[in-house]
Amino acid sequence: MEKKRCFWVDEKSPVYIEYHDSEWGQPVHDDQKLYEMFLLETFQAGLSWITILRKREAFRTAFDSFDVQKIAAYSDEKIDALLQNDQIIRNRNKIRAAVTNAQIFIQIQTEYGSFSNYLWGFSGGKVIINNADKAEAIPVKTELSDSISKDLKKRGMRFVGSVTIYAYLQAIGIVNDHEKNCFCYPHL
Image (cartoon, rainbow, N blue to C red):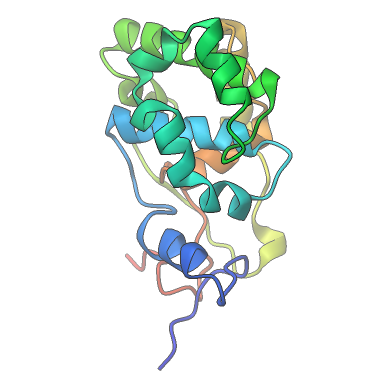
Protein backbone atom coordinates (compact mmCIF):
# COMPACT_ATOMS: atom_id res chain seq x y z
CA MET A 1 0.00 0.00 0.00
CA GLU A 2 1.35 3.41 -0.97
CA LYS A 3 1.95 5.98 1.77
CA LYS A 4 -0.32 9.03 1.74
CA ARG A 5 1.65 12.25 2.02
CA CYS A 6 0.82 15.93 2.33
CA PHE A 7 -0.48 17.64 -0.81
CA TRP A 8 2.69 19.64 -1.43
CA VAL A 9 5.02 16.66 -1.82
CA ASP A 10 6.06 16.01 -5.39
CA GLU A 11 5.91 12.22 -5.48
CA LYS A 12 8.43 12.21 -8.35
CA SER A 13 11.05 14.02 -6.27
CA PRO A 14 13.13 11.80 -3.97
CA VAL A 15 14.52 14.95 -2.30
CA TYR A 16 11.02 16.17 -1.44
CA ILE A 17 9.85 12.76 -0.29
CA GLU A 18 12.88 12.29 1.99
CA TYR A 19 12.50 15.78 3.45
CA HIS A 20 8.77 15.32 4.09
CA ASP A 21 9.09 11.81 5.51
CA SER A 22 12.06 12.34 7.80
CA GLU A 23 12.36 16.04 8.65
CA TRP A 24 9.35 18.28 8.09
CA GLY A 25 7.30 18.68 11.25
CA GLN A 26 9.76 16.74 13.43
CA PRO A 27 10.55 18.67 16.64
CA VAL A 28 14.09 20.07 16.61
CA HIS A 29 15.84 21.31 19.75
CA ASP A 30 19.46 21.21 18.56
CA ASP A 31 20.76 24.74 17.93
CA GLN A 32 23.00 23.60 15.04
CA LYS A 33 20.02 22.11 13.19
CA LEU A 34 17.80 25.05 14.15
CA TYR A 35 20.35 27.40 12.61
CA GLU A 36 20.70 25.33 9.45
CA MET A 37 16.97 25.40 8.85
CA PHE A 38 16.81 29.09 9.77
CA LEU A 39 19.45 30.01 7.20
CA LEU A 40 17.77 27.88 4.52
CA GLU A 41 14.32 29.34 5.23
CA THR A 42 15.61 32.91 5.00
CA PHE A 43 17.18 32.13 1.62
CA GLN A 44 13.91 30.54 0.52
CA ALA A 45 11.97 33.80 0.98
CA GLY A 46 10.33 34.48 -2.38
CA LEU A 47 11.47 31.18 -3.90
CA SER A 48 10.22 27.61 -3.90
CA TRP A 49 11.34 25.26 -1.13
CA ILE A 50 12.38 22.59 -3.66
CA THR A 51 14.90 25.07 -5.08
CA ILE A 52 16.49 25.33 -1.64
CA LEU A 53 16.39 21.59 -0.98
CA ARG A 54 18.17 20.90 -4.25
CA LYS A 55 20.89 23.38 -3.28
CA ARG A 56 21.10 22.32 0.36
CA GLU A 57 24.44 20.52 0.11
CA ALA A 58 25.91 23.42 -1.86
CA PHE A 59 24.73 25.75 0.93
CA ARG A 60 26.29 23.40 3.50
CA THR A 61 29.64 23.60 1.70
CA ALA A 62 29.48 27.34 0.99
CA PHE A 63 28.35 28.22 4.52
CA ASP A 64 30.88 26.17 6.51
CA SER A 65 28.45 23.37 7.44
CA PHE A 66 26.09 26.01 8.86
CA ASP A 67 28.55 26.90 11.62
CA VAL A 68 26.88 29.96 13.13
CA GLN A 69 30.12 31.19 14.75
CA LYS A 70 32.01 31.13 11.45
CA ILE A 71 29.15 32.74 9.52
CA ALA A 72 28.82 35.52 12.10
CA ALA A 73 32.47 36.40 11.44
CA TYR A 74 32.34 36.40 7.62
CA SER A 75 34.41 39.14 6.04
CA ASP A 76 33.54 41.21 2.99
CA GLU A 77 35.92 38.96 1.03
CA LYS A 78 33.96 35.86 2.06
CA ILE A 79 30.69 37.56 1.14
CA ASP A 80 32.15 38.45 -2.28
CA ALA A 81 33.22 34.82 -2.75
CA LEU A 82 29.69 33.64 -1.90
CA LEU A 83 28.30 36.05 -4.48
CA GLN A 84 30.45 34.28 -7.11
CA ASN A 85 29.24 30.81 -6.09
CA ASP A 86 26.70 29.74 -8.71
CA GLN A 87 25.73 26.68 -6.66
CA ILE A 88 23.78 28.77 -4.12
CA ILE A 89 21.28 31.65 -4.20
CA ARG A 90 23.48 34.65 -4.98
CA ASN A 91 21.43 37.41 -3.48
CA ARG A 92 23.64 40.05 -1.86
CA ASN A 93 20.96 41.13 0.62
CA LYS A 94 20.28 37.56 1.74
CA ILE A 95 23.97 36.76 2.09
CA ARG A 96 24.59 39.90 4.15
CA ALA A 97 21.48 39.11 6.21
CA ALA A 98 22.87 35.61 6.85
CA VAL A 99 25.89 37.20 8.54
CA THR A 100 23.85 39.69 10.58
CA ASN A 101 21.26 37.05 11.49
CA ALA A 102 24.05 34.70 12.65
CA GLN A 103 25.38 37.43 14.96
CA ILE A 104 21.92 37.98 16.41
CA PHE A 105 21.31 34.21 16.67
CA ILE A 106 24.43 34.05 18.88
CA GLN A 107 23.19 36.97 20.99
CA ILE A 108 19.91 35.11 21.52
CA GLN A 109 21.83 31.96 22.50
CA THR A 110 23.74 33.96 25.08
CA GLU A 111 20.59 35.62 26.43
CA TYR A 112 18.48 32.45 26.67
CA GLY A 113 21.10 29.72 27.10
CA SER A 114 20.22 28.39 23.63
CA PHE A 115 18.27 29.45 20.58
CA SER A 116 16.06 26.43 21.24
CA ASN A 117 15.06 27.82 24.65
CA TYR A 118 14.19 31.15 23.06
CA LEU A 119 12.20 29.73 20.17
CA TRP A 120 10.35 26.96 21.97
CA GLY A 121 9.47 29.45 24.70
CA PHE A 122 6.97 31.05 22.31
CA SER A 123 4.89 27.85 22.28
CA GLY A 124 5.46 27.00 25.93
CA GLY A 125 7.68 24.12 24.82
CA LYS A 126 4.75 22.39 23.13
CA VAL A 127 4.22 21.23 19.56
CA ILE A 128 1.18 22.83 17.96
CA ILE A 129 -0.69 20.14 16.04
CA ASN A 130 -3.10 21.46 13.47
CA ASN A 131 -5.94 19.36 12.17
CA ALA A 132 -5.88 20.23 8.50
CA ASP A 133 -7.75 17.86 6.26
CA LYS A 134 -7.08 19.85 3.09
CA ALA A 135 -4.49 22.30 1.80
CA GLU A 136 -6.72 25.34 2.23
CA ALA A 137 -6.92 24.70 5.98
CA ILE A 138 -3.18 25.20 6.48
CA PRO A 139 -2.36 28.83 7.31
CA VAL A 140 0.61 30.70 5.86
CA LYS A 141 1.07 32.66 9.09
CA THR A 142 -0.42 32.83 12.57
CA GLU A 143 -0.30 34.97 15.70
CA LEU A 144 2.64 32.81 16.82
CA SER A 145 4.66 33.47 13.67
CA ASP A 146 3.66 37.16 13.85
CA SER A 147 5.03 37.38 17.42
CA ILE A 148 8.30 35.63 16.63
CA SER A 149 8.78 37.63 13.43
CA LYS A 150 8.16 40.89 15.28
CA ASP A 151 10.66 39.98 18.01
CA LEU A 152 13.36 38.88 15.54
CA LYS A 153 12.91 42.07 13.49
CA LYS A 154 13.12 44.15 16.66
CA ARG A 155 16.46 42.44 17.35
CA GLY A 156 17.67 43.39 13.86
CA MET A 157 17.19 40.21 11.86
CA ARG A 158 16.20 40.38 8.21
CA PHE A 159 14.19 38.12 5.88
CA VAL A 160 12.16 36.99 8.89
CA GLY A 161 8.64 37.99 7.90
CA SER A 162 5.74 36.12 9.44
CA VAL A 163 5.24 33.83 6.41
CA THR A 164 8.93 32.84 6.42
CA ILE A 165 8.83 32.26 10.17
CA TYR A 166 5.69 30.14 9.88
CA ALA A 167 7.39 27.95 7.26
CA TYR A 168 10.37 27.70 9.63
CA LEU A 169 8.13 26.65 12.53
CA GLN A 170 6.65 23.93 10.30
CA ALA A 171 10.11 22.77 9.22
CA ILE A 172 11.44 22.45 12.78
CA GLY A 173 8.31 20.92 14.25
CA ILE A 174 7.06 23.64 16.58
CA VAL A 175 4.04 23.49 14.29
CA ASN A 176 2.97 20.15 12.89
CA ASP A 177 0.94 20.82 9.76
CA HIS A 178 0.91 17.32 8.32
CA GLU A 179 -2.53 16.73 6.88
CA LYS A 180 -4.77 14.32 8.78
CA ASN A 181 -4.60 11.76 5.96
CA CYS A 182 -0.77 11.91 5.78
CA PHE A 183 1.07 8.97 7.30
CA CYS A 184 3.24 11.47 9.25
CA TYR A 185 0.26 13.04 11.01
CA PRO A 186 0.67 12.42 14.75
CA HIS A 187 -2.24 10.17 15.68
CA LEU A 188 -2.14 10.55 19.45
